[in-house]
Amino acid sequence: MVYKNYLMQNQDCGYWKCLKSIKLKPRVEVFWWRVFNNAIPMHDFLYQRRMQEGFICPRGCGVKEDVEHITTNCGKLKEVIGCLNKWGFGISSFQSFQDCWKWMDMYKDSNGFLVNVYCNAVYFVWRSRNKFIRGGKEDCSTFMASSAVSYASISYMVDENLGNWGTNQSFRLLDRWYPPPPNWIKINVDAALLKSYKAGIGGVVRDSEGRFLLAYGHSCTHWDISKLELMAVHFIRQIQKEWMQDYNEIAD
Ligand SMILES: [Zn+2]
Image 1 (cartoon, helix red, strand yellow):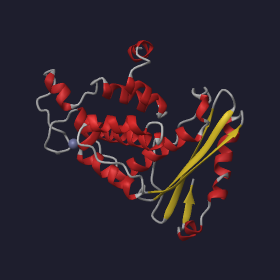
Image 2: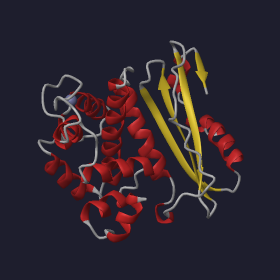
Image 3: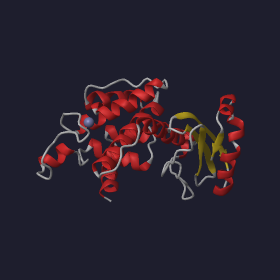
């Protein structure tokens, strides 16, 4: 409610325009809104409010965990960006949050997809950090990098002018992901539907170590979400590649 209220009053501010134009998924958008408002419970944030004894990054980076750290130079984020750059994404490395924001603002129109991928990467790295401090295991970097690409692919797959998602949307693609057995590839498919019946189908192909192999997306017009999901599965035939024959099985 606070977030919504705030937005009503601040539609014109720079970072908000930027976040809107790069079409982040709602939960990633809220995360970034909190980043810009210094409202993320990082160690330094809690330390300053006497709610935490230390201010150092819990991952052992050895430096203060503040907005600068979680958005630009945390070791884990660098690993994820390294993966993305290995796949050809070409994301620069930033010295400060100011640098990062300048870059986002500069590319939001010409390469919003890339900015979207970066914002997702920061979001997934933060989510994994929370899992880690609660005693769980961190997600692996390739998994986070491929998830960042998948999120961005889904947002950019649907017609640019349509704005809001309909109530029939389904975003189950990344809720939980279990790797297939060795030498298998796994294809996760998803479909999304807008009120105008404009729809998108897409999928992500990964191997048994969660490595991103391929993503596809296609937009169409439809009204039935279950039919759309079936279409997303059938679409696999069109993207089937020769190298897929090198794997033993395909899990769907
Ligand atoms: Zn760190």
